[in-house]
Length: 66
Ligand SMILES: [Zn+2]
Image (cartoon, rainbow, N blue to C red; front, top):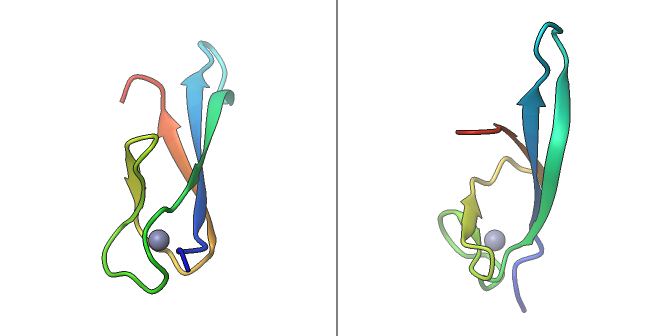
């Protein structure tokens, strides 16, 4: 059985002159490691890994350009 953890990376863009951020894009990730694995969750197809924060769905906010 594989790990059931999922994540969504939301890239935000600063809107000049306002305090709000626009969501520029979102990428959905699915961990491909075995159930109960150690360390970071990883979606090898998309080349992204993320830390377990206790939820099976993790939202990762990133500023565009980082
Ligand atoms: Zn995992």
